Length: 132
Image 1 (cartoon, helix red, strand yellow):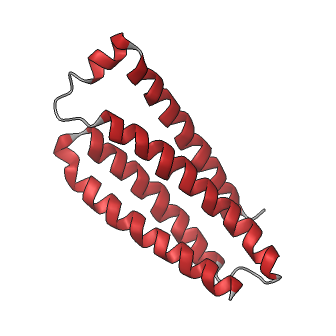
Image 2 (tube, helix red, strand yellow):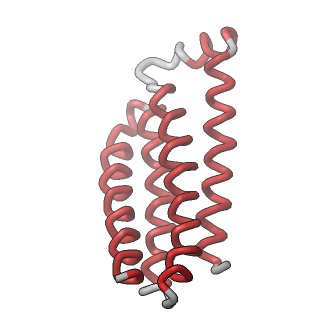
Image 3 (cartoon, helix red, strand yellow):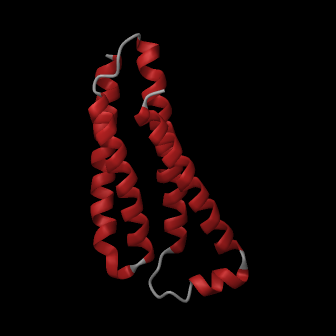
């Protein structure tokens, strides 16, 4: 596997652990009550994004970068685009989660969302050009 594929898979697993931990904290009444004392924090959305964007999307792209070029019988269109996509996605996910948790950092949510979309488009175009 390429280093980028491994990064996507490892980051996805790390985000999954964080999402599962946050979900566990939200399920236990004592910790849930403590978390909800943070005014304006959107813990459920942070939990959802850690699991969905952080884990599911990162792992799907990691697997796609490994498998689709092999299915197509070609090299990946651009390994540098894939690497850029990883860093955009990993940092954007972190920024979005911080934006959900820290109301004063709401700008990070917007920036992270735009960056996440940009990374997804970059990844899809890279894979599209690989399998065409």
